[in-house]
Length: 212
Image (cartoon, rainbow, N blue to C red; front, side):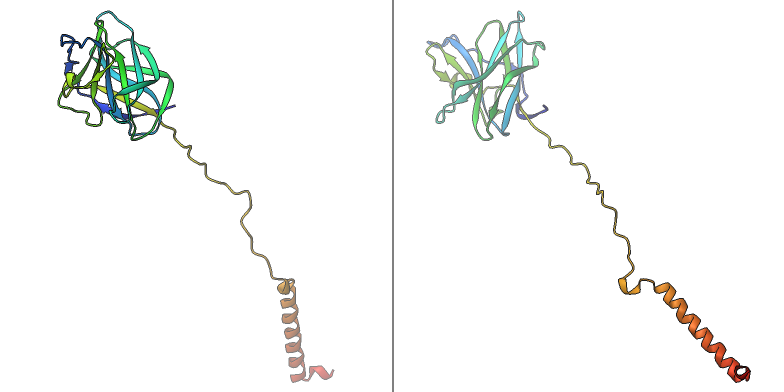
C-alpha cells in the first residue's frame, strides 16, 4: 500500500550531542518526539545514521506522557542497519501502528557507541523535541539543547478507485404514432381520392357529359 510523508526534519549537519560525561548522566536511549499530522498506519520512518561496524539498530515507536510529552510505552518496533552512512535510512515496521493526527509520539533508539544519529540545532522541529535517557531511567531534553534528530515519518494512505462510467443497456426511447392517428396515411389517401372523384363529376356535369 502506498504511504505518504507526514512529519519531517531534514537538516542533518551535526551528530547528536553526547552529554555522557555529565555527572550521573550515563546515556541509555535517545528519542525524538513528533506530532502526527495524518491518521493511519505508520509503516516506516527514516533516520540519518552512521555506523562504524554495520551494527543493527532497533527503532521503537512509543506513545508519550500526556503531561510531559516524553516517551512511554512501546507501540511497535523494527531493526535495520545504516546502509547509507550519513544519509537517510529506512526503518520499516512489519506491524504498522495506526497513529492519530494531533497526537504526540516518539521514535526511541538505544544508545550505542557503534552508531550515531545526525540532526540539527535551532529547534527545527517545533512540534517535537529530542531527549536522552540516563541510567536512572529519567528522560531529559535539556542535555541536548535545541537539537532535533533528522527524521521522516510515513503513513499508509489508501486511494479510492476511480468509478467506471455507467453504460445503460436500455435503448433510447423512439417516437410512436398516437393511437388516434394509426392508419393515418391510408385515410389521407381516401380523402384525396374522394375529392378527385367529386371534381371529375363536377367537370362532367359542366360539359353535359354527366347526362349521357
